[in-house]
Structure formats: structure tokens, C-alpha cells
Image (tube, rainbow, N blue to C red; front, side, top):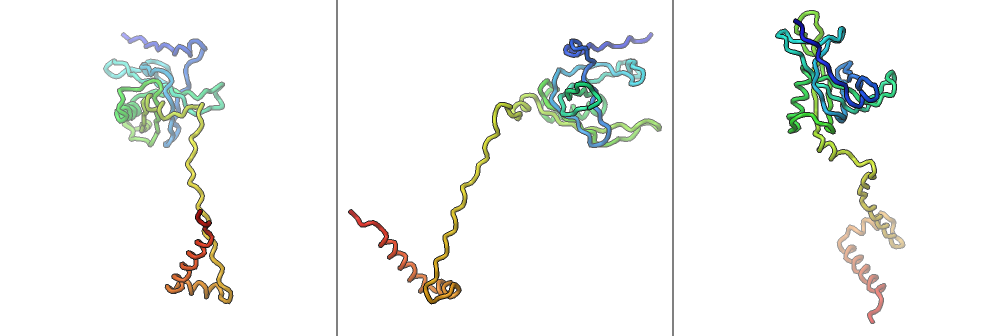
Length: 215
């Protein structure tokens, strides 16, 4: 006796508009990252064979399940008509463990609409059997919806102005040397304590002379 295939109802918007759902997120090579905001509530469905489309089962007869997460990415594929950047992550196996770890690290209880997720294909693992493809290894990060909204700038606001320190005051122009002395001689004379005291006294007298008379 065979178990009937499990039917997965389409998303309401996809059903209304006649679409089959967002394209599948692809990880063609190590280093590929797919990230974005979760746009609809994740669903659980039975895995299907890529070639035949038949539902997949474990050896004990239990269905092989997967989580389907739709995210809004910045990706655009010119071969897809009216590509809006949405991609579906079919979460199972190693990817499921990576996302579960990311959710725990974020202190969340699960994935939610508005949360931001990023999944990176890091490297290939070891094939379980000869002739089989090595399993892809993933890492993931997750930001809960409330925290993601907090760090999302309001499109109607302008960026805050950066503080600019006031310009530095220009350095005072060096005093002209007295008649008969070269600049080098005048500079050397200023190093003499006696000369410094005399200059200070002259500057004080000049300041007093420039001050207005008291009433």
C-alpha cells in the first residue's frame, strides 16, 4: 500500500495571480549567500524527488519534510519575467541545522515574517556513499523582526548630519625682525631669556597704550 502524495496549498497571492511561487534560491558555488527579509509565514511541506516529482519518504515510511521560507532578496534574474527578487529557501538537512543554530543564537523561538535571514554555502562535506554528491555545508544568521525593523532606516527621513569640527584658527604670523637683524639672528635672540623678558615688557606696554582711557 502506498501513501498518497501530500498536497501543498499555494500561497494566497500566488493562487490569486496564477503564479507557482517564488523561484528557488540557488547556491551554485561556495561563498554564495542568499539573504533577505522573510515576506510570508514559513510553511512545512513534504520533500519531492527533483526528477519525478514524487513525494519522498524515509525507509521507515515516514514522510521526509522540509521548511519553505520565502525571502525578499536583491537578486534579479534576467531570464525570469518580472523578477521581483523573492526567493524560496527549501530548508532541510545541513541548512536546517544551520538556521536552527542561528535562531537560537538570536534568542528567538523560530522564523517570523519581517525577520531577516542570511544563508551562506561555505563548502562541500564528505559524500556518504561512493558516487553520491558531497553534501553542501551552510552557515546562517538570523535577525528577529523587531530588531530588524529597529535597524531599518525610515525611507522618508534624511540621513543625520555628520558633526564637523570648527576650523582651526590660523597660526599667528611671525613678528618682523627689527631693522638691522636677519630673521635667523632675530630667532636666535628670542631664545635668550633676557630678550624674552624684554619682549614681554614691550608687548605689555603696547597693549596698555592701545587700551581705551577709563571714564
